[in-house]
Image 1: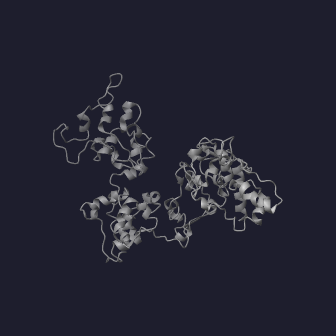
Image 2: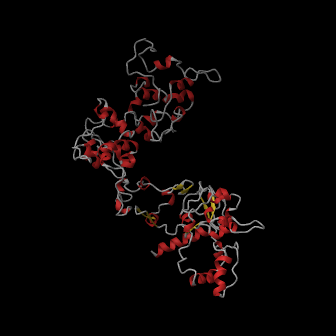
Length: 545
C-alpha cells in the first residue's frame, strides 16, 4: 500500500513539473489564464448555464474576458469551481459615473429564477442578532452589501444599538480574494492518454464506482503493466460529454481465452459489478427472451455474447426448457437451414461470420459430421500441419475452405517476392513438376508452371508480385476477396504475349486465341475446333485458385 501511495505521489509530481514539449492536439494549461481555447476542446455547448436556479448566458458576456469571472481554471482536485457572486458584482453591483442604478439593483430575478429562495441557509431567525456580527468581524461587511442597502438595512439598528463597528460602505466594492495559484501543467488532448494527464483533477482515480453499478480499480490493471491507452485510446473528455468505456471494451481481456494460457482476466460478474446491481437489462422482458430477441442478435451479436454462451441459447433452441413467456418448448430452426443447399454452404458462411452459429452449435455438434476439431482450437494455426485426418476425410477442410484463400493468405505470404521457379513451388504442389506443363490438370498450376523456364529467354525469372500487383490487399476480415492474392484478368497476359518490345522484337509467343489453346486443347479456340469441356475456363482469370 505504501509503495502504491509513493508511486502515485511521484506520478503527480512528474505531471505537475513537466510540460508536454511537442503538442499533437489542443493543449489545456492548468495554470494559464482561462480563455475560450482552454474550454472549447471539451465544452461545445456553453451558451446557457446548466446550474439550476440560475440564468446565465455566455453569449451576453462575450465582450468580457473569461478570466474576469473565472479567475483560475475551474476544474481542479476539489471539483468544479463556479464563479463567486463577488465576481458577478464586479459589474452588476457597480455604480458607473452618473448612471443611476445597476442590473443588480433592478432585481435579483434578472439572474435568479426564484429570488425568494436567495436567503442563505446560515441566515436563521436569529441571524440579525449576534451571529451576523461575528460573521462581519471575521469576513468583513463588503459581501453583505451585495444584498443589503446599508443605510436602510444596517444603519437603522446600529443607531439604536450603537455597536462598535466600522462604517459600512453604502455600495459594494468590487474586490475579489486572490486565488491560490495552480501548478504549471499542460495537458495535450491529442497525446496518448497517461496517468499524468488525469491525476491532477482525479486524485481518487484508483477506485472508480459508477452509480452503484461498476467497481473499477486502476491499480489492479497498472500492476499488470497495462497502458492507459489500452482502454482509453483518446482523451475521455470530449465536446459532447465524457466518453465512458463500454462492457465490450472490457471484454477484450475479460472472458478472453489466450490459447493454452487460460483466461486473460476473470469473467465473474461480481468482480466488476456491485452486488446490488441488476445484471439483467430492463429490455429483456419475457416476450423479448421468448420471441423478439432475434433481431437484436442479428444487429449486434457480439453484444449478446458478452453474457450469453452457447449452452444458454441451446437449451431453448433445442426445446430443452419452457420459453420465458411460458410457451411450451419447441425446436427453433432457422429457415435457411431447411434449404437443400445448406450443407454445402454453411462452411463458408461460418468463416464469413454470416449468422449466429454459436447460439446452437458447439464443438461436439460440429464434430458429429466433421472429424477435424471444430471450431479449431486456439493453437490450430501452429499445429494444423501435423494433423492427419481420418481415412476418407481428406476433403474435410474443403467443406469450409472452398476457394483456398484461407490457406493461401498464410502459405503464400512468405513467397510473394520469391522467383517463380520449380524449386520454389514443387515442394508444396507436386503436380507442378509434371511435364509438359500444359498437361497439368489444374489450370492455375499449369499457368504458373509454363513460366518456370522464362529465364532462358528473359534473362531472369518472374517474381510473384510482378503479376499479382494487388497481393497485399486485405479486406476487414483479413482475407482477399475473390481469391487469396487477387490475381489478374487475361489482358495482363497480353502485355507480353504477342507484344513487341522497343526493338520490335516479340516479347513472348502466342498471340490472342493461340495463348488460350496452349492449355485448353478443346473448345472454340482449339486447333481441332472441338467443344471445350464444361469445367474448362481460361487459365489465369481471377488469379490462382
